[in-house]
Length: 107
Image (tube, rainbow, N blue to C red; front, top):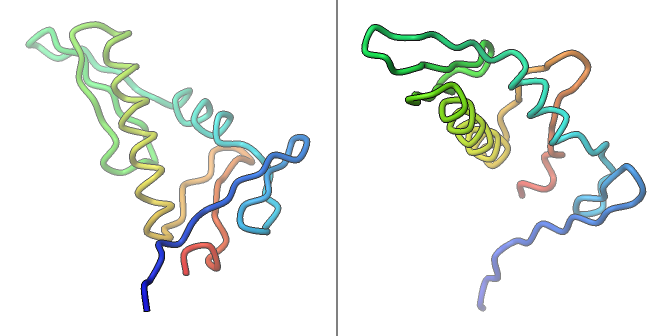
């Protein structure tokens, strides 16, 4: 028997999404925005800017300018979120925003 890869179906319904039959509030953009608002930047002696997000262990980036560092940091954050969701890990809460995919989706 051929096994097919499991698919994730996301369907928009107003300001909510249905993910494989589960309704969840849309908030990915807001969540990323709240995480980025907590970002901390430090100018290193080498002239490179280091960016981190408190509460997001392992999320950091470097850049030659603040904009470059901020852009790289957001890309790292987005990849980190995807990996956390894939592995079924909980994401940190920023204000009232948190993201969680129902465990049945990971089956």
